[in-house]
Image (cartoon, rainbow, N blue to C red):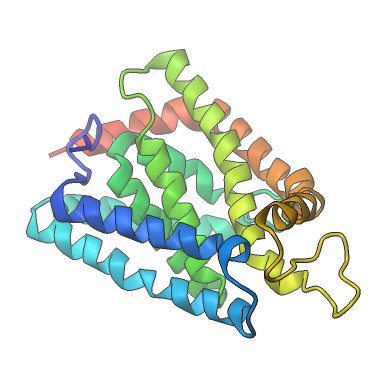
Length: 263
C-alpha cells in the first residue's frame, strides 16, 4: 500500500485501484513505444492514438474503485476539482506557447508530493482534460498528454517521504527538471512517426523507418527529439519548473498541507 501523504486529503493505491494504475501505465507505455516494436504495416500510426484512448475508461475505473474503497471522499474530490480548474485556467495564459513555459507541472508536482501518487495520477489526467476542453485542444494527442501528465503527478508522490526542508526542495527541483524532459520525450515519441514519415526510397536522417531494427529507430528518434523538443521546449519547461519550485514551492507546499489537514 502506498501512503497518500502527510495530510488527510488524498487517495490510497491499494488492491484494485493499484492494479488499474499498473495496467493502464503498462498499456500506455507499450503503445507509446510502438514505433520500436510494431512490425511495418499500413495504418499503424493512425491506430496508435485510438488504442491509447481506450485507457480513459481505466482512469474512470480508478476513480470508481477509490469511491468504493472510501479512498476518494468529498474533500478529496473538492481539492482535486479546485486544482484541476486552477491548472486548466493557468495553462492557456502561462502555457507552452513561449519558450516552452508550462505552468501546469508546477502545481502538479507539488500536489502529487503532498497528496500522494494516486492523487497526482488523477490530477494529471483531469488537469490536461479540463485544459483541452477550455482551449478546444481535444484531439488524438490528448490521451497521450493525459497519461504523461498523470505519470508526472504520480512520480512526485513516490519521492522519498521523509525528506523535508532544503532536502525536500532539492528533490522536487531535481524531479521537476527530469519530469520536464521526460514529458517532452513522451510527447515527441507520440508525434515522431506522424511528423517524420519516411519517404519511399529516400528516408531522411530523422525519419521513422517502419520495420527497421529498434536500435536504428532509437538513434533516429534521439536526433529528432533533441532538435525538435529537448534543446528548446523541454529546456524551457525545465527552467520554468525550477524557478517556480524554488520561488513558490515552500509556500505552496505549506498551503497544500494545511488544506489537507483542515476538517
